[in-house]
Image 1 (cartoon, rainbow, N blue to C red):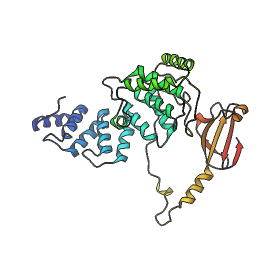
Image 2 (cartoon, one colour; image 1 turned 180 degrees about the vertical axis):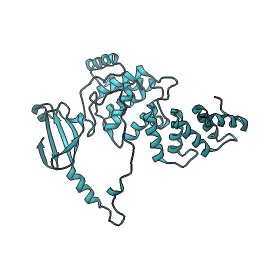
Image 3 (cartoon, helix red, strand yellow; image 1 turned 90 degrees about the horizontal axis):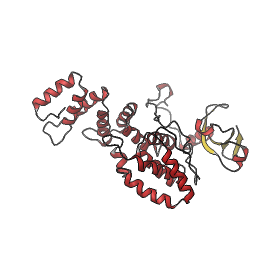
Image 4 (cartoon, rainbow, N blue to C red; image 1 turned 120 degrees about the vertical axis):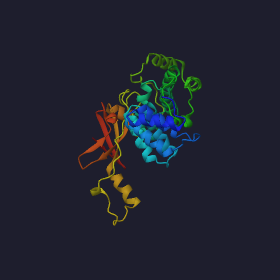
Length: 331
């Protein structure tokens, strides 16, 4: 449907949108959001986009997210923007999952790694390059240049799919990966020079055999372990499954601190957390534990006998230690 350019066409488009035409609602919102047009009405544009989004239009959800995140035509509201992001993720939008992964990098490295890995497994070269850079530099991912080279080879063969909205300016303005091909070319050359020829050949063969939907082959050696709780490469969740966070809900009134009570001091907060959180160290054998061939994670004490930790930390790891302060306990 063409964008309406005069009041008559606007009226026809409005009639179609009111009759339930989701496409007409999107076009109407786009027309009213154009500041260069005499029909400019940003508040009305938001209303039509919301109607289109309620009808399942993924493009309308992106318009709403951008409006709330950047403050375009409405007040900037990151809470509403994140709610729009949740809805877009529920519709399977790749751009929304990429943005969520970006936002999670500084909040929850494990969740970010799972999201990037899921997108990379579907052929999203932006996520593949993010994993490559993450493994090259270390930090929230394990520093593993062989794994970085693996994802770089894969990204070089993936490239951007024309016509698909798999990226977003929020991600691309930070990392500037473009069409992926150029970035992969230079990163591949830099990484390949740092690896022995036999290891480089092994990684190249592994990347050539990889297909979308498969877990990446585990490459090595690991130079620096990942951040606490982040699964090692090739040991995360299923590639094709996007990580979904639960919708935010306000704390029930019965659990909220009453206005008359004093705020908990910082020392009390840290003391409470310190008593409840333990470091989990898991290994396949006692020998691996002694040689520090281990996975690290964290556990939260629910009561004196119950701890909760992440499955990927202890999966197939029969030797488990719990550490807190200077104390170590075998679980």
